[in-house]
Image (cartoon, rainbow, N blue to C red; front, top):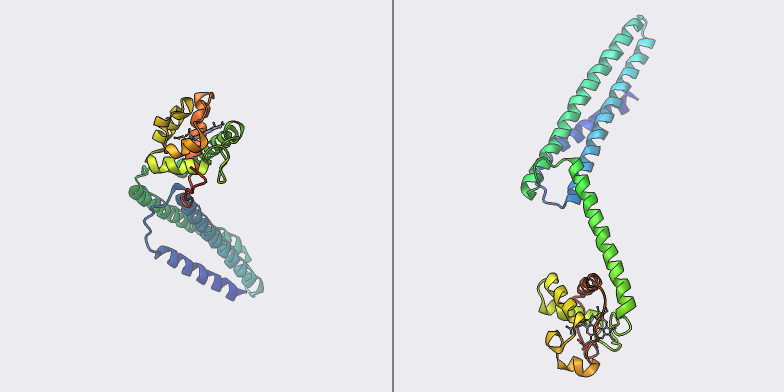
Length: 249
Ligand code: HEC
């Protein structure tokens, strides 16, 4: 049993040494990654500290056994000894924990410098920003779902998503044309909205062949907000692997 105890202390010391001599990582990761990094190190510190406390208790237990077996009755010394050992162990653990947290903070500050995140970024801020990012993602997803519903209601009778085409170019082909023509989503969306309110050959991203084949699109009398949403969604349907063919334009 004693051996196991010693072995464990040995292992912990090794771990501590490995942790102390780990290479300094300058962190450029996303906030998600930074948070994961922080949690990993915080839990490592916690594991180390609680192990330390456990080892102290095991030592005290061994000492107790020893006293029981010995001929000299030193039992009356046991309680004060156990208490002071516990006190010392807690103090050491506490200072070890402080050091560990300190080194994590250093890492965080380092990352703050390299990623231009304000140095006072605390876990709370990271968590807040994380939930903000999640909220943004959810809002974007909700908008995409709403836009897709608009597509199914008002556009899908003429526009299929992918080839074969119905009575208009498939959405994926339109998205490809707009990506080829526009560098920015905002510009493309504005022109798509303008086209849908008042379709004309002059405004179109397609050539005359498309108009000969499909005719011109009727005016979409939807609220501006819906036209914008469906245009944004359309821009996002771009697939770089899609190559337009004769069936699309
Ligand atoms: C009645 C059939 C019909 C419906 C419904 C329809 N479209 Fe079209 N759309 C067309 C045709 C035909 C074309 C191709 C000729 C053209 O560009 O006008 C086209 C072209 C387009 C283009 C390409 C514009 C360009 O620059 O040439 C976009 C973008 C578009 N549609 C979006 C939509 C959206 C979004 C909806 C639903 C809100 C929709 N369309 C509903 C028939 C339709």
